[in-house]
Amino acid sequence: MSRTQGGGRHLDEDDIRVRARGGSRPRTRNRPKHEDAVEGMVTAVDRGRYRCLVGGVPVVAMKARELGRGSIVVGDRVDIVGDLSGRPDTLARVVRVRERESVLRRTADDTDPVERVIVANADQLAIVCALADPAPQPRFVDRCLVAAYDAGLDPLLCLTKADLADPDELLRVYEPLGVPYEVLGPESGLAGLRARLEGRTTVFVGSSGVGKSTLVNRLVPGTDRAVGHVNAVTGRGRHTSTSAAALPFEDGWLIDTPGVRSFGLAHIAPEDIVEGFPDLARAAEDCPPECSHQPDAPDCAVQAALDREELDPDRVASLRRLLASREGETDEV
Ligand SMILES: Nc1nc2c(ncn2[C@@H]2O[C@H](COP(=O)(O)OP(=O)(O)OP(=O)(O)O)[C@@H](O)[C@H]2O)c(=O)[nH]1
Ligand SMILES: [Zn+2]
Image 1 (cartoon, rainbow, N blue to C red):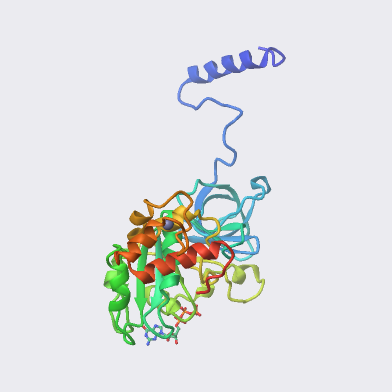
Image 2: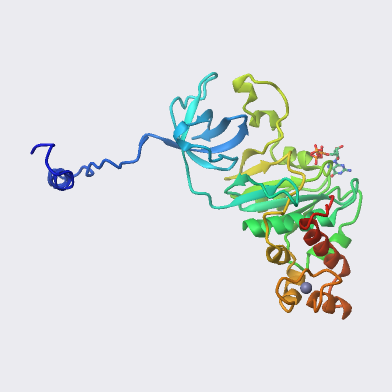
């Protein structure tokens, strides 16, 4: 049959012929490119280079031009072609990014509308908070809880430096919310925490000095965070990256985020911020639409419940600060 005949009809007959031979898949012009691509997980990103773990081998890759401008972040599952040997000076190519099961986003600050995905495919957010030195920052915890619930991640509160202070005051607030927690000190075993991390992809966040690195290093001994970085391979500097890096851990992943001290929440709607406060959300349901929940808000049911002493004033204050910070006031943590 001549190729010059009507295209669609010709394709039909070609299709039948292929099937009649049995076995082989029908050839179509739309077959995915790069059928030989192999799946990998992005463990670090550094200036346009993606460090991926492909079948246990660390491979450095660049983004194929056909992928355009879309971002690739730590946690992404990607399809890779090219040199997958992992040898120095080799550079593979990421040709596809698999659909993400979750995205953890942040805006640079609460009034900045530009949001960035910082980690893909995580399912747990470990909020590291010291019990002392630095003093606990419940507002930081609240902010992280909002980000976790919004992203569909399960929160896990890691209370560190239990040798320096008692966790009771913080637990009085967070235990009734059903937030899982671990109390950790230098001498405490890590069995409980390990069990919560097994098989999961957990992002660690914490403000400076809370003991996050100490914790991650205890969980994955001998992990020099530098190994997570592309630099050694590209030879482009030895700085400590401020981007996230994933470490394999017990059938799951630990993702450290040294550059992320907090989450700007500008991309989260006020209603969703309230959802991050399960102890207050019920009362807020009785508020007028678009209620600011601030003390001067007319008919605010949160204020009414507060007046009846049904709500924890500190929690209401924290919610109000978060909501106000989206309006342009800063909420430093
Ligand atoms: N007393 C006490 N000190 C701790 C504990 N965990 C960590 N530290 C100390 O706290 C300080 C900060 O710990 P890091 O692990 O560097 O804290 P970090 O959260 O990674 O801080 P950045 O490196 O700034 O991100 C260090 O001097 C640690 O030795 C703890 O459980 N108890
Ligand atoms: Zn209200």
